[in-house]
Length: 281
Image 1 (cartoon, rainbow, N blue to C red):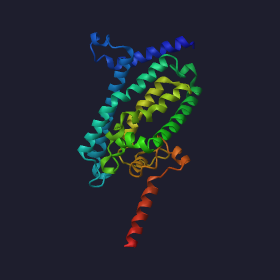
Image 2 (tube, one colour):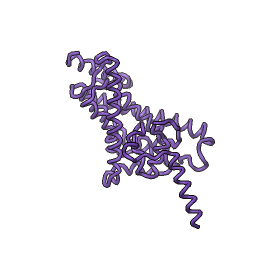
Image 3 (cartoon, helix red, strand yellow):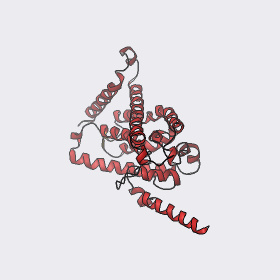
Image 4 (cartoon, rainbow, N blue to C red):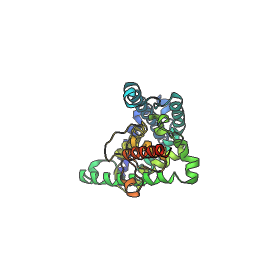
């Protein structure tokens, strides 16, 4: 497909996505908003919808429907902690939304390797590029997250998220409760990979927004036991030790880098320490 045609389709698709949200505004208002800012506003509104919608459903299901079965007494987070996480997330979401808006602008200008239609490359190549893209994202998110645990980056950026460092303070609403720069940095691998790996652009955006669902899941403190997924059981350990389980969707990067601790191993080590302490008394 000629470049001009590819970029035209990319622009039309992005305008269609804007229409999913911008109908909420009168035409007289909408016509005054430039395309880029319509994209940013759409991303902000959809980000908030995913965050509050999925978070509320997750809390209802885990705490109100099955809380007495899945959580020990005193381990369900208090409302004040959940409200604080919502506050931090609300401050950050307008800035988070700049990343997909800028990425769309770059794609529309032809600066990335993104393509608008699966038939542009064919299904086999689409599948191959998908796995290459996700491998790059997993690598990038792991190292970005690990770097954010170093010195000043942790003190001034990542600590805002790690102040929720016990099981009873973590909730699904902690998923986006980051310093805005921290949250953007951890999502940047989704964007920078587009500059060297061909990727279907709508699939890219679905994956980016799917992280909003994923981060809800990994902060509910429930161990799903689905290998090789880096689920909530692994991520709860990360919030309590600070030096394990930096990965994104999968455990592979932590395994390769020697930072993996499974929930089973963590519980066994904790029991062994408790036994040793009792014997020492």
